[in-house]
Length: 196
Image 1 (tube, rainbow, N blue to C red):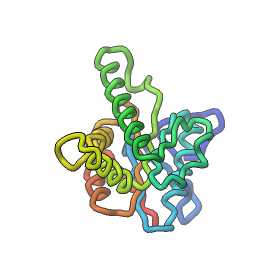
Image 2: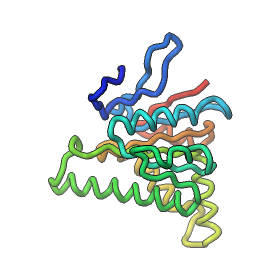
Image 3: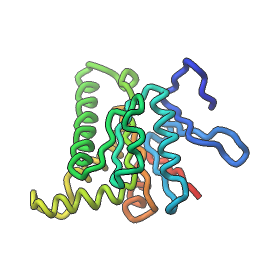
């Protein structure tokens, strides 16, 4: 679906071209979240950047988690990108804040204060998801803040993947196909974009 100037379809985000040159887009009605998987150097970050730029052009507010600290920094001042968190505590705080926002949106819908269609869309981009989870868990273990080895933010993130669509909170996650990403593929509404 081509981008038409002045028309903002917040349910479709183009992200590239296929082998015949036709535009490929992500239909959020069919798959509210995207999982971008590929090997090192395959173009995952380029795909993320394309999705971010096109999402902001459609009025999305974008929040990014960048554990490598360098992949998404160029987007810090991009219009529509609200935050790019790269330090461990900043990433944890950002994901927690976004999960709270999703919960607040559901409360507002439940109270009859708004509807799904009236909510402005949010795009949460998590580059190198496995690294983010490992850092959050290491932080949890080092600070001995509770029982278990998994930081509570990990479950909040999974909750966003399970429940985010109706609150117009959409996730784009990238990684290298490890076990965590295989787990995410099993969640409802996650659409895979495989980079070869």
